[in-house]
Amino acid sequence: MYKDTQINCANFCNEIADSEDLYNLKKSFLEILTHDLKTPIIAQMRALEMIINGGFGDLSNEQSEMLNLTLDSCNYMYSMISTLISTYKVDLEEPQLHYSEFNIMQVIEETIKKINNFVNENNIKIIINPRIKNPIVSGDLTRITKVIQTLLLNSLNMAFKNSIIKIHIEQDKENISVKFESHSVYINPEKMEKLFKFLTYRTEKYNKIGIGIGLYLAKKVIEKHNGRIIAESHITQRNILGFEIPKETPSIIYYKNCV
Image 1 (tube, helix red, strand yellow):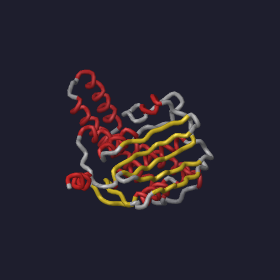
Image 2 (cartoon, one colour):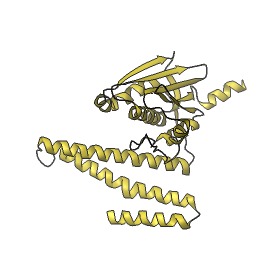
Image 3 (tube, rainbow, N blue to C red):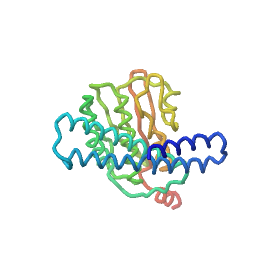
């Protein structure tokens, strides 16, 4: 299996230099990611889960700890590959948004619970600062949830240990914004812009693995919602990542403008 995967990847790289059909190349790469990489990782995760849960006998504490670390690594790789697949799909296809109304406060609170272990390990405190009358917004729930997860995780990766992450939720007449403010190293405008470009997520001082994976996709999703990404860095070591989107669906906004 792994030999076939290496051959597929090698053939793909050889074709890049000769082929002018980038669309088909991207489709080919997407198939490699999905079938040759994503599927085996799922099998590894399920096998590890069975072993950890005692499916093949009792484990010592050392064995259990090592297997859990391996499972965490597999989960991380699965998440990275899934993000790459989603990113290529956005470039290859015009994504269709499935609008619904949801409570954005609830989405943020659930996201914090999911990454609670990471927060505790780095002794980071999260404070939510809502300045909204109504937390109900309209958008693609699945994609907006992923954007919130991506921006929060990147803010946590940037933040100094033993610091505070402030989540500002604000609204005006037409829009709602979510901003993640972290106490972290200053990023100059050029490097900040690069964070949101596809596969340019490494910088000199800012080279944590995967720091920008997903930011490109997050930007695309917000723009598809007729919104904008917010990215600010201040010399006082205060960085802000966030987004602003309309509170209502485009059809409702269009209808109001026509009446």
